[in-house]
Amino acid sequence: MKKKVSSLSAKDYTYQLPDERIASYPLPERDASKLLVYKNGVIRDAAFRNIADEVEPGSLMVFNNTRVVQARLEFFKETGARIEIFCLQPEHPRRDVALALSAGSPQRWLCLVGNARKWKSGTLRITSPDGSFTLHAAKGERHADGYMTDFSWQPEGLSFAQVLEMAGKTPLPPYITRPAEQKDKTTYQTVFAREEGSVAAPTAGLHFTDEVLRSLKDKNISTGYITLHVGAGTFKPVTADTIGGHHMHAEQFVIEKAFVKKLLEQKSKIVTVGTTCMRTLESLYWIGAGIAAGKLQADKRVFLSQWAPYEWQGERPDKKTALSALYDHMDRQSKDTMEGETALIIVPGYDFALTDALVTNFHQPGSTLLLLVAAFAGEQWREIYAHALDNGYRFLSYGDACLFYREPRINK
Image (cartoon, rainbow, N blue to C red):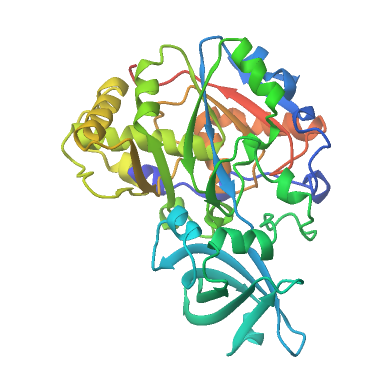
């Protein structure tokens, strides 16, 4: 299976996306977006605010409650040279995103550095207009994905999250070429965001409002929450000739034992809101399957590799067996939560375990996110995207949404 999947070419999963179809700003009302519905081979246009009418009563809709941090920092040298630092992931003294953001000074992070050639040495500084805090940055060694950067600040008691909120800017994706504005701090954040740690929004969730969430409840559609901290790797293009040559980024997740129990008790469809939720849910199945089969030791922080599903040997456990093994493991460990990382890549040929329907946005040509959509919707993705282009849909993070249905392939 791995050999067949890894030979796929991203060039076969592309389309022409005119620049003017990329949404640079969100609509004034989040739920005013269009909603393309694909079910039983039929494409239909709908309004996002009526999504509850498109979801079967009794379904479980799963959201990612991660919160975007203001991870883009703008410094100016005494010469006037502008240096932009984009915080990717913490390295020292804590590698856990949530713990690092809640901790004080000093810290070391892996960062992207814009205009790095102008910053050969020296410490950069940002001081708040009222002088209440000062942030220092010193560039360290270069790595394949960026530079190690040492941050320190005064007062030292401030958390790094507080510092970023005061000094940073919204980390808009690279295809939105305008500067970040103050209102992006609100619009590039879901209404249910709780756990700080993402440098990119789970954008399918941006369409939801409190009113839409109430409409789900009124239609007997339950909700559940996971946390997956979205990294900048979500925008990493596939540059290798085949998928096998693409190194999939790992992202940190947190799930609660009560949520696993909810999955076990769910009798109707499971609807994932966004590719981040799908990636996390499918990872949970494989972690549980690994525990059930004795192939995964989950006593410490769990890590699911990029190719784990495609390298599986032997019979796969069904959904209930895998989730029960995961729940029982957490129970034996007296853990209310499980933390880990997943590098799972979902591409055509992947066999979905937990996801019955997917709410998502329209994604970039040749991206791993489009490959995920193609894996879920099948070759019909081309027809779906052509319909969206022909009917005025807005694309990418601030664009419109889709709702895809499919029948699960694994025995419930």
